[in-house]
Length: 556
Picture 1 (cartoon, helix red, strand yellow):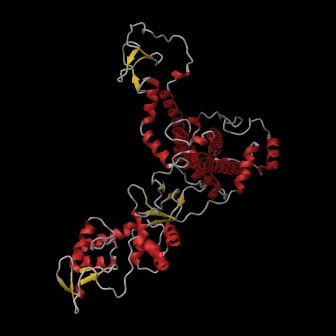
Picture 2 (cartoon, rainbow, N blue to C red):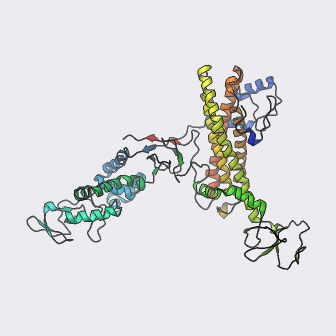
Picture 3 (cartoon, one colour):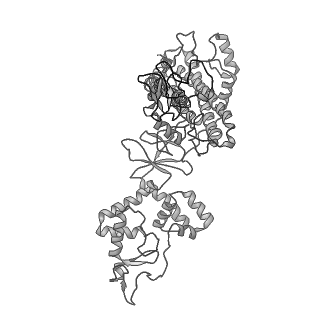
């Protein structure tokens, strides 16, 4: 079977004695040299490697496992339990009621670390006041209504007298009749409020949700269900640590990650992987802001850019592209500027069919001031877009064509030959993941280097060239090893002799380790060396050899 991406990458391998451009060595080693290489540190790896590769392999062996991330998938059935888990922590911590705990969590957008911080800095009472929580006053008299010595209470909204059983008092001490409370609650629920404030003028206290549900349910049961749903859904809508799965059609799950894990990539149990920060498709090592611009720019624009580069010239005044569909070589832009179509330089209006008055461009001129910056930017985009698309196309081939072939070979190794085939599947997963990293690295490079769409700090701009060289060196090495791994996996392993199967296994395992190490280095270079140079703060998800974090189902 041919390599998954050989045709489109121009692979020069045509026989067993020839070696691909992406392979190691020059193909001239005999069996004795391979045996010596095995003895000198590759533990049987049948390929020629340079010192950098050996160092990368040693570094891969020293890597720690991916850091564990607490990630849960929450459904409508498990939502009450997930919400209750957080509220119970706050209730026990501050000795408050459930509705006060919910109010405090919504105020702090369900960030437990913010509550701990405010408690430490401001104290319990100040923190609760800021969240408009008033703890119930013991033996307090109604403040908004007058009460007779017997059992009559006057409501200060409708000014009717009611018995004690027909009025309700909130934690703030304000008392009104149940009918007025009910209409107030009903109007607030219809407005979409999940936190209903007291009716008293200038009182910001949040009403007890238990009283709200009890009163509204008697007269407006549908509104009570709506309010209950609003309370539950606040866990999704007001919680920075929870995001809906963007699957289409929607699977009905929301993903919760632990505090401080905003920049991570997760996989829902339904199989959809996404960036937790922007809820878009997985796009590391490209930051969310750059990826959003790249997506907007790339929708049908790559072919348009190529056509513009080949068929238009930019106006030297307004820099808009101009298409010439006939006439002489003097072209006039809509902005009023005239230019020579042959060289793109600005000219006057006076001309004949053979010449333009005061203008000559038959001699080559290296004047740097006439460089067409607009066209250069189009060519820059075409350069990065082509490589982004080429690696994206290779990923599809390796997933759709090589993937089933690898699965079949794994089955043959494990069932027919009683051998371990897991290494082949793991190497293929590594190939797919690194191919995507490589593709998306070109989107990052387009915005990071040479463009004007992201700004760098002037004080550290001198460091950009060094960091760019480091990044592009890692990108080049990653490209080299990814193509090598693709070639190794293209071999029909079960059809090979026993010794070659072992050598292929060792080669695939070691190249996959090298690829993972370079990916980790590239992520570190972007996060630690390049992104700090930008004026706009940006971050990327940490590199994980096992791919996005797999979310677990939260028990109902």
